[in-house]
Length: 172
Ligand code: HEM
Figure 1 (cartoon, rainbow, N blue to C red):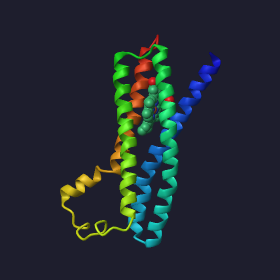
Figure 2 (cartoon, helix red, strand yellow):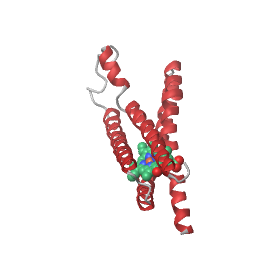
Figure 3 (cartoon, rainbow, N blue to C red):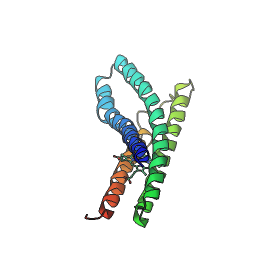
């Protein structure tokens, strides 16, 4: 029993750390690094940001692997513990679905970035700078930004799950 408890605790720790690494890193990139780079406008700073993004990406691959494995273990542990009410199952299903969409989106954005990086005449065509307000608004909620919104929502759903478990404990 003790061994199983320690294992579940280790999985919870790994899951929380991987979530922190990915979503925390993405928040830092969106709120601090990208605006700072846009403000300086120096080609050197652009290269730095690209190098940071590249380094961060390999950590994201690791984080996704850890999230999937530890998430599956935590799911089984919760289902076996008997605390999974219908409301818990509903929110867990929603959390897993949103997490899977977030992973998928990450790989799609990555594939798109790779295609853009390879020299192609369409990638740098004219008209990129004067997009319509609608296109700009859509751009705000596409790709990396949407990954961030979904990731933050998955964080919230994890809190909802924990709240549902704690509410079901005797004495609460
Ligand atoms: C974007 C991906 C994900 C993020 C950001 C995320 C985030 C989190 C966070 C922050 C926690 C709370 C950890 C703690 O403090 O103890 C958590 C718990 C959990 N996650 Fe995830 N997660 C993700 C993917 C997944 C996946 C793919 C699964 C299932 C396969 C999963 C299943 C769970 C379960 C069962 C819990 C325990 C909830 C409870 O307290 O009952 N997660 N997640």
